[in-house]
Image (cartoon, rainbow, N blue to C red; front, top):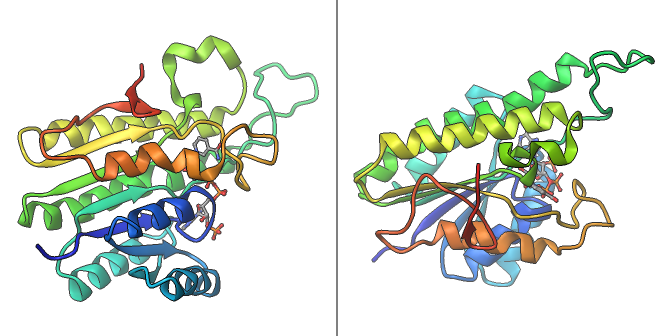
Length: 242
Ligand SMILES: NC(=O)c1ccc[n+]([C@@H]2O[C@H](COP(=O)([O-])OP(=O)(O)OC[C@H]3O[C@@H](n4cnc5c(N)ncnc54)[C@H](OP(=O)(O)O)[C@@H]3O)[C@@H](O)[C@H]2O)c1
């Protein structure tokens, strides 16, 4: 069989970088997609020096044209896409949200819009783009990087915090559910996961998990055997509540 091809968005640093590394070490050809050409080429170059099959491709997930250009690049270069990890994300909240905050520190709506664009609409467009290519080989694995903060069943743990981020990740989970339902009965396995709180630029230095630990579940979902779960939400390789 030809080498599998994986696309990892936001692969130049943090969890994305670890996911690229772990997939490439499984002999998968990885497209490291990122918006900053210099940083992306540097990251891919590091992997290439270790003789791992990693190629950089430019991608700003907030641009539909950039998403389309990535699809064209993957189709032209490899003629296939087996795995998509929607990892690129932002954590836009600077303030806790309160309707009657006496200081007037309401959530800036532009930040919420950017969170939806980056964390939810971009994965939706990338699913739409790559599912038809996956269907050609009757094989596809899609992993949407969600968060513990998207768990509706745990809302009471942190009410009022991180509204924009949480909205966007709940929407992302809906993208997972809808595309999984649309592709039910095919060899397309589409899941959400949370890596837990990890030490990255986003997670900060105080997080309990390494990026390597956080990458374990998304890599496991990206390489599920045929007949594996679809339409689920996972942490530490276990299903969790929405
Ligand atoms: N770290 C945690 O504790 C944690 C917990 C739960 C979920 N997550 C999720 O896991 C994913 C990765 O998180 P992380 O901790 O690795 O975050 P990070 O260190 O902040 O890295 C974010 C990545 O996303 C990329 N990105 C952001 N906006 C982009 C855009 N418009 N186009 C292309 N790439 C873009 C960044 O690229 P640049 O380098 O160009 O900025 C970077 O590669 C995110 O979806 C996050 O929500 C993380």
